[in-house]
Structures are given as C-alpha cells and as structure tokens.
Length: 499
Image 1: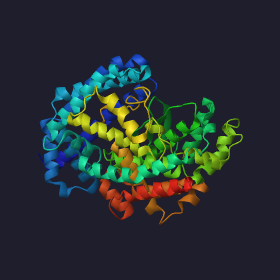
Image 2: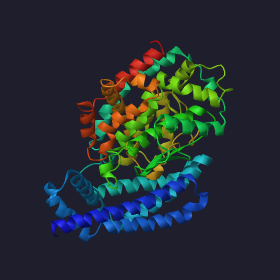
Image 3: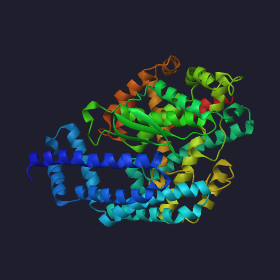
C-alpha cells in the first residue's frame, strides 16, 4: 500500500473506532449510573454486536496492511502520529491473535458479570457470582496465551496495565513496602485508640453531601461544564474527550467516604481534562498507564486531600453545611480523624498507611487465581485468611470481603497493583514538586490551580505520548524509586502518632 494512502486510511479508521468507543463508553456509563436494574438484558446483546463490529474494523487484511506500511515508514511520521501508529500496532497485534468468537463472547460475559456481582454483593451470595468469575479467570488465561504464550498469563496482564510490571518486579516492590510499613502499623496499633472519629461516623444529610461534592470539585479547579458527577455502587471515572469527563461517587452516612471518593475521582478527572490540545481526538488523549493515572487520584486524595492545610481550607464549608454534626469539632480534630490509621475491611475506605496492605492481598490472590493454585471456589476463605494475617481483621461476610470491589467483574485482573504503585509514584512526584513549589502554602491559599498547572506541564499534557517510565523521568529527573513512598508515610504517621 502507498504510504500516503495508508496514512489517510489510518486517520479515518481512528475517527471511526473513536466514535464506536465513545458510543459504547456512554452506554457503559449509563448502565452504571441511571439505567434500570434489568437494562442489562438488552445491553449485553447490543454490546456484543458493537464489539464484533469494532473487532472486524480492526482485524482485517486492509488494516494489517495499513499498520505494516506505516510501521515500515514510521521515521517519516511526526511524533504524535508515530506514537499513534506504535500503540495501534501493539493493540492490533493482540487483537489479531484473539479469535473473534472469543472476543465477542467475553464482552457479553462481562456485561452479565457486572449484574451478577451487583446482585451477589447486595445479597451476600458469592455462589451467585463464582461461576461467572471462574469464566472470567479462564478467559484471561486463554487470551493471554493467544497473544504471548512466552510469558505467564498474569505477567502478561500486569504488563498491559503497567508497562514493565511483572510478578518479579511487584514481589520486590511489595516486599519493600511491607517490610517498612508493617512495623509502623503495629507500633500505631499498640498506642491504642487515641484519635476521636465519632463525629465522622454520624449521619450527614445527603442534600448537604451533594452540595459539598460540588464545592470540592470547584476547589480542585474542575470545570463542571467539562466534567459531571454521577452516583453509582462503586465510584469510577470515565472520559470521552477533555471536554466530556464524568466522575461518580457513592453516598454513605459519613461525609468522609464521599469526600475522598470525589477527591480521588477528581484526580483522575484533572488528568483527562488537561491533556494537550494537540492530541484532542487522538487515541493518545488519555493517561499513560493505570499506575500513572492512579498516581494522580491518590496524590490529590491523600497527599493533598488529607493534609492539614487542605482540611483547614475546606473546614468552614463543612461547618456551614453540617453545623450539628461538627458543632464541637475543630479543623485539627477533623484532620486527625481522616488520618487515623486502623486496619479495616474495605479497601476504598482504608487509611493511607494500611491501604497498600489491601492491595497486596488482592495481588497475592490474583497471582494464584491466574496460575491455577487457587480456585474461585476457594477464594472467599483465602481472602478471609489473608485479611486476618496481614491486617488482623475478621471478615464478617463476603459482601464486605471478596465481593467488595467491582474490578474482577469487569475482567481487570492485574489492575489492583497499580493503586499501590500509583501511591508510590505520587509520593515521588510530590517530593520533586516541592523543590519548585510551596505546596502547603498554595493549598492553604486555595491555589490548587498552580499545582494542576505544574502537573499539566510535567504529566497531563502528554497523554500517552510518553510511556510511564519516561513520564517519571521527565517529572522527577530519575527512575521510579519507592523509597519516597515509604519515607513519606513513615514521616507523616510518626508525627501524627508521636512515635
């Protein structure tokens, strides 16, 4: 195929695939937020049809020729187009190895799995979800085997979510984190219950919480003309372009659960809202990896959102909206409450110090599910055992145990480690940001926009133009180093608990 023709067809195909992705993304968002319970019965069939069309648009002789031609001439392409072609070649290489019947059947299965998980969680009935989860694990093994049989299935998926990640790399990472943090967790536990959180556990009116969510988005400099907020069972963020980003939250009685859900998802949104104008409409207009994306949600949620300066900034609004619940509470008391370190059941409600232990448990379980040494039938008992061993917590039921997260129902085995890696990336990024910005002063003065601008220049504007390791090097001037994460948590919690 002639080079110029291949380039024109490539650009046209990107637009078409983008449109299908946009349409399917809106449908998924609708299913998770406002669709009636039984909508999945028709949704699955529609997604199956659209997925098959997407597959056939990608996996065909003409597209193979287009990509092969452009890869042979990639030195003649501008930087953005070259990166688009490289990513397309990577994706197409995977797609062409997956049988179409497997691909479409898996997409339909994931639709069913979401509904089975929701029902299983609501009724504490793991047996309802287990057969579907077993199929998902089997599909993930088979698909990995089709694409790259030279590596283990779990190594394959870890690398897909975070380029360069592997069981070997993550075993070393988690060993370092565990060795450093477990003694600190035990030291804090020995101090006893020294932080009052009773006021945070009161019931906060839903109307006030919704107003507070809008206020938090404003503080984070999120333009609501470009970003909406919805409600769902398990909060998430989705995006279709930098002018259509959608975050979600789930309201509980306690205001802090929603507060940190909005800040966490707001961090994801800020990344997408600030991708460069030069990649609008490009497949590259998205985060570089799940770990880099999580670095931003965890950075805003914890390093900024749980800082004393941030609590002092937002506390007047909290007092205004919830005067009865906070009538005898100071900003410092609230700061201590949201930083209380205490082993718990629920990952998304975990404190900053113990959070990576929740991720480590899921990583250990995924490893064994994928290598076959743990069956899906054995999963609940092993989940409960690890929670007792790692966190000293008794799991009362599967709803608060192995059914608490939505990730496995969506097929994302290998995603969980990115939460902990993201926390570590975020600590390293902030350590270097502090060399140029007085972060505490900016937060105190409600100038978080300056922080967003710095991160935009170092990370956001590049989208997927740079790979994760290149972004860390660009931002920090060095390779990834988890010691920053360990040092940050150690310093912070020793100060809070006077250790």
